[in-house]
Structures are given as C-alpha cells and as structure tokens.
Amino acid sequence: MCSTCGCAEGNLYIEGDEHRPHSAFRSAPFSPAPRPAAALTGITFAPQRSDAGDLHYGHGEAGTHAPGMSQRQMLDVEINVLDKNNQIAARNRARFAARKQLALNLVSSPGSGKTTLLTETLKRLNGRVSCAVVEGDQQTVNDAARIRETGTPAIQVNTGKGCHLDAQMIADAAPRLPLEDSGILFIENVGNLVCPASFDLGERHKVAVLSVTEGEDKPLKYPHMFAAASIMLLNKVDLLPYLNFDVDKCLAYAREVNPEIEILLVSATRGDGMDGWLQWLESERCA
Image (cartoon, rainbow, N blue to C red; front, side, top):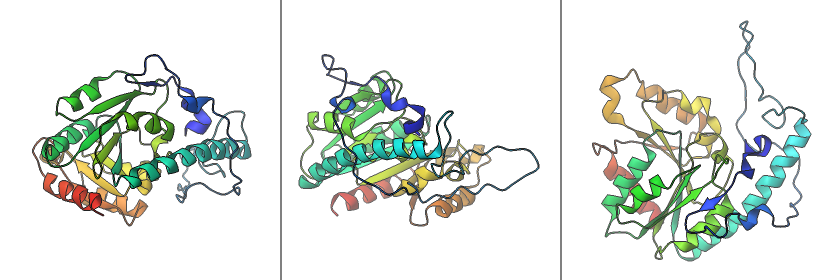
C-alpha cells in the first residue's frame, strides 16, 4: 500500500485551488497516538503451496514487502500514516453526521463503469435529493466535467502520483460543494482496488463496483477492498450473454471475503437494478 510504495507523496491538485497546490496535510506536525503492534487487517494471506515456484510476499507481519525495509519498519510507517489519516477522517465523519449527510466512497478498478453508474444515479436523483461529488483521478478534470453535465455540483481532486484519495483531500474539497443537509456526497475514488481499501475518508460506507468484464475472482484477488465495502454493485450485467462470467461464483467469492456484504446486480446503461440501488441510497440517507 502507499505507506510502503510512497505514492502518498504525489502532487495534489484540487480544482479551483491553483494558488495553493500543496495540501497542508503534507507538512502538518503530527504525533501518532500509541498503538499496539498488531495486524491492521482481518484478511489472512494463506496461499496454497505449489511445486510451480510461485512467490508470495504477503506473509509477514506487515502483509507486504519493500526492499530495504523490515516488517517492523513497514508497520511503523503504516501506523503513522493511517493514524494521521484516521484522525482527519473522524473529523470529516463528525461534520457529515452533524448535517445528516450521507457520504459514500465509491471504489473500483479502472474501467468498471463507476463514473457512468454515478452519472446515471445522479440523473435519477436530480430534483429529489441534494447531491454533490468529489471526483478523484491522477490527472485531468474530465470526470468532474461529466458529473457537472448532470446538473450536480462536483469538484475534481487530482492526486498526481498518488493512487488514492485521503481524508485531508476530502476535508479540503467537501466544504467547497453546495451540499444541503440530509444530502448525499458521492466520493469517486481513484480507480484502484488496493490502496483505497486502507484509507478512511470519513465516509459512512465504501461501495465497491465490480464489472462482469473483470472476472469473477476479483474479490479473492483483492480481498481487502471487498472486506472493507458495505455493498458491492456488480455492474455491466447487460453484457453477461457475451461473456464467460459465473455470477454465482463471483457472489460466493465476495461473501467468502465479507459475509456481511450486500450485493446488487446492475447495468448503468440498460437500467437493470437501478431501482434497488436507489432504494438502498434512500434507506441509508434516512437511517
């Protein structure tokens, strides 16, 4: 994750903030709260041994590997980074709760149809519920422009080399959006099924979007993300007649990683499952 690969040091740009390109988050003084040396995830890496000579670097205490760093050093870095982020996320969550706003963190691989699903959702909510969007990408403001075409206010956050949004980015971006009390803030994270799993943004739920074009074993390949998600949207189901995709296996794999996960089958382009998705949003907004 980013605590070992260093991508958290990417150049940050928040749309409309040309004169302040670097977040204060990067240089703010911080003393991490004491924490025991414990695993930071409940996912156990247990690959089967084989005679093929396969290599697996997730066995150690840190669950990953970085050249020149011990498992203890990687854990210390991860604890410091995540403690700092989690403190900011808690403040974000308190602000959203005070205004009864539902904040959702949409996560997926690139190309899952996440932005199309979001735009179709916003079109259906237009005039019914106040919505706003924080768009995360490494570069360009293309997706924020697509969102604004629906009539929904949006702000683009470009992470540069960074492969995920963090809590400070949301703290910087969300107040600039005209979201009413009891509205919904959609946070579309950078397309990545690894690092965003570890970074709390202050959202109420992570929403994992998986496309049927990606293969049914994605939940097993990227277990942290699906374990962290409250709901999985299996998207592009209109393409199932043209693919060798086993829906039952995919759902079983997702529940193997996360027995509590809710699952909806949807097609953003054809409209399948969208009513169920909107009902879920309304029930969470009113919770």
